[in-house]
Length: 490
Image (tube, rainbow, N blue to C red):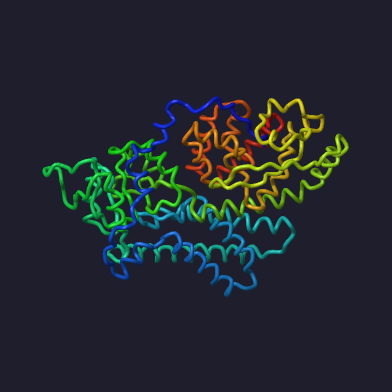
């Protein structure tokens, strides 16, 4: 995909300072600087276990146990089933099935679990057959049926154990309510009566305490937003329940995006039930919740990385003759080094060297790091125009993908000189660096290439990060292929 150029910066905008303050310098910014001098209360061994209990890891361990049993028992027919299992858990991870849930019901997940398993196992059994590998289809189908049955059984047992642990107060996460709106009051009442959600509410934080007439069961005021660091430390809070009606949601999301490694899980109580229930399927006593993510889970990153490695390695082998031919053409044209190297900003602000096939006559490195593509267009030769028009010059970035510096789909990497300027002009710009930068991106396939709005590009990149799944990557790659021969820019 043709790398995008950006609008030429003219200086910081007048409202930058006010926009950068985030959520009124309260909840999220205060947590970022929270004081760690508070006193931790004594907790039982079960409570300490419950506070660090990771449902997703236990569910994955259950699926891994099933695979291990098949590896030891179904010896002669194992590898296609294990390949299907690998595809299945990758699909589960990318679609969020391993994410923790408050409302645990196996029947809610059965359709999704079975449908993704069937697709993954069909691919695992079909590809070897097409390659001429002899398979006993009936035996493998029977094995696949046993495998999904075992996975559902183990998951059901895990769900039951978690519900029992929650009800017995062995698995309980210290929870703090942010806000004092109607949904917060409803949820506190539900959680005080039902332990199966695994949330132990210690109180709520608001600008001022609620009137005595409005305070219900479990409605305990702990302080205002300025006291939040002390409250979080003192009560070892691991979950924050945020009442959407009591906070400024856009600033809340900006604050979350600006933080990395936040010590708490954030759950947003939705004011629009239909959107919340259809988006997550999770709720507390009928009040829809949305889990606010600061990044991708381990499972999501694993599935995306596995996809990158397999596709990049395949394309490097297939396209190696084309790359060698283009390199020869570049050498014939002007005998300069055919590989162009440039420092770019990657995930979490780390610098890396990005590779391309050189499409312009070389200049001094300081000019290359700060020059705009429209200024440098006069240095493009005939070979350069061709490989830029067809995006062939981007192919060496497959090496960057294999090395882990880049991914196929993500925010496009920019040079440090412009990252510094754009970060000063647009506080949301740094949020793009929460994830690995990409060969192509959602902004690029939506026409945000060349001299287009940086603000629009930031919104598309952050939307991609907040709503990522593996199918979204596949869609962006398909759209990229459709636009490749019409792409322009640097």
